[in-house]
Image 1 (tube, rainbow, N blue to C red):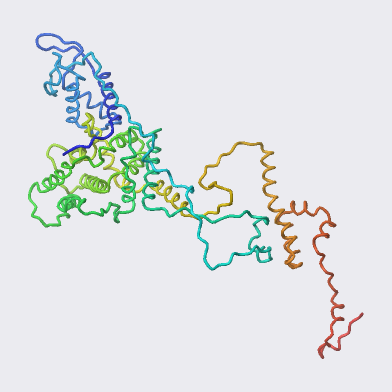
Image 2: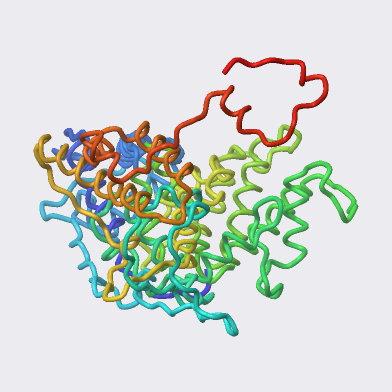
Length: 532
C-alpha cells in the first residue's frame, strides 16, 4: 500500500504479540539434537517450530483455524528477526528462518515488547454534549388574538376536564428548544454512537482505542440514510467511487458465469485475470479500508468473536464510523468474497490454495492493518476478515437499538413543554433518584397524594353555581360511587349533605297531576271517571 497515516499506538496488538511469545516459549518442546558432530541441549528444528506454532495459532481464539502454515512460517521469521529465537550459534536476523532441520533455541533474555502508553482523551473536547432543554425559546403568541379570561368551571368544562383538579395554576409559558440544526444532529449521532460502542466493547474508557477527534458525525448519518435498496452506501461525489471497470470485474466474478456484461470472449484462466484485476485495485489503496485510526477498535473486537451476537453488534457500530467510500468498498468486497467462496460453478482460482483461503489471504491486508506494521497484522486481519465475510449481511445492517435511542432523543428535543414561572428544571431530561421507604409511609403518601386532588375536585363541583341542581346531584352521585371514601369524609352525616346539596323537589302522584291540568280531556276520555 502506498503512503501511511500515523495513528494511535497499537496497544492491543502489542499485548497479543507478547501473549503469543509467552505461549510459544512456554509450550514448545525442547530436546537434545545432534548436529555438527556434537549434541545441543534444549533446542528444536525449524520444522518442529512450524508444526507446533501452527497448531497453537489454529487453536487460539485470537487467530483461529484459518491460519495457514505459510503464515506461521512468516511469523517465525519475524520472531527470528526480533530475537525471540536464535540459531545454535547465537545469530538472529541475519538470515531467514527456514522450515527445515536447522537447529534453533530460545535466548536467555526476555524478548517481550513494552506496551505503548495509551494517550488520554478524557477531556472530551471533541465529544459534543447531548443537547437538552437548557436552551429554549418561548413560543410566539399569535397576533390579533385577545387573551382568554379565566372562566368558572361550567358543566361542559367539567365534562371535558373531570380528571383535572380544580385550583389555582401558576403562571406558565409554552416553550420549545431552538431548531435542531443538521450539524447538531451529526454531533448527537457521533456522541451516542461512541457511547454505544464503548458499552458494546465492554470497556471502561476508550482511551488509547479511539480518539473522538477522528470520528465524523456526518459520515455516520450518511452511512445510515444514504443507501440503496441493497443497503449499500450511495456516494454523493461519484469521483470517490471505484472505477467502473473494477465494479464490472467484481460483478463478473460475483455472478459467474452470468456476470460477463461486456460479453468478452472467455478463455482458460479468464476468471483468474478478473480476480487479479480486482486485487490490484484494492492492494494499491493508500491505507486499509478500516483505516489506521480505527485499527485498535477492530483489534479489540477480535476478543468478542466467540460471542457472535456481541461481535456483530460491535462491528455494526464500528463500521458506521468509516468514511462512506470506505464503507462502500468494504461492503462490496466482502459480498464478492462470500459469493465467490460459495459459487460451485466458478473454476478453481489457484492450483495450490483453496478458493476460500485464497480470498482471505489476498484481501485481508487491504482491510485491516496498522500504521506501524505490527508483526501480527496479517494473522489478526485473517481472523477478522473471515468473520466479517461470513456475517457481512448482518454487519452492514443499521443497529436498531442505537437508531431508536438517537431518534427518541431527537424527538424529545422537538417537543414543546410547559415551563412554570420560577422553575428552571427540565424534569423530562433530568434523571430521577429514589430511596427505599417503609410500607406504612408508602401507603400514607399514596392516600395523601391521591385524595387531595379528589377533594379539590369535589369542592369545585359543590361550588359550581351555574351547574343545574339536577346535573349537580347526578354528578355527585357518580362521584360517590367512584370515590366513596372521599365522599364519606366530606359528608359524614345526612345533615352535612343536606346543608350543601339542594334537596330534590317532591314528585306529584299521577291522579294529582291530572287534576292540575287546565285543558279539557279529549272526547273519548271525558267518559272516564276518577276518584278523588
